Image 1: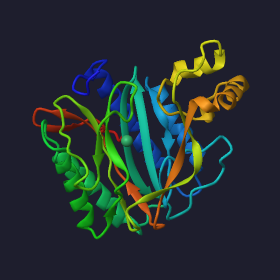
Image 2: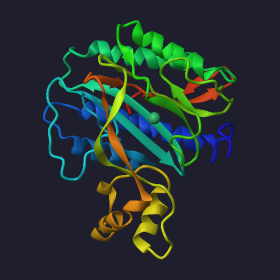
Image 3: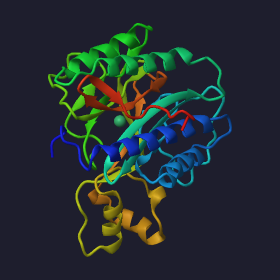
Image 4: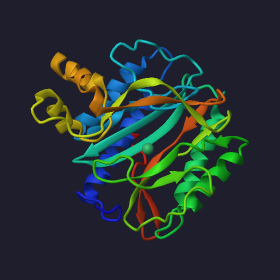
Length: 299
Ligand code: CO
């Protein structure tokens, strides 16, 4: 299907986006000194389910130098500390209509990292303003990069926003956070995530250790009941062993390892701190309509 014709209908995208935004705000509020990332992940994912959606990927709660793809496993009891910079990156889907949104909080509410958080939010706002139907993706990339550099910080050049299609979190189109990398254009009606990262490091990432996020590369053999059930639940969306419902499902994940892609945690290469902000937007006739804005009650 084409990115210009999102199915199963815009209403489901709007519902998923509203729920994802509420879950994001909850995660930001729970990120206090002494909180465990595992508990925040469970609360955020629980919020998504209680509001009638499903998590589109495990809550990403990357901290400090970790830029993305950290989700806690069931044994992760580490606690957040005062001054940690925590990214809360949340996805929700309703029948495959996926919304993806993120923001960053300084644990303990000090202002050591306010500059980084402001830079990435300004990058996101500038990127959203630059979206036009038929317009160049590169206009968004330039706007994002300029806003972040205006604060003397760097956009991370090897992490990008992305188009979204049904059951596809990262569909065909990338939206770089630096100019000069894309020759593509936005299609009217397309759903895209604008997703800048700002750092006081090198502006590049490197792969860290493999984390706890996996995804099916292809459907499992139909005679494997547990793997087929897992595939039925998650299709091609990222998930985590924390979501297994039984020991049988957990051992199926070991058995099915060849079928699964595993995501490394992304680390800032220069050891810099990383802030992230992200909205899912609809490319409308007059520009971007932000679908993942916080609700009036903060979610
Ligand atoms: Co995203």
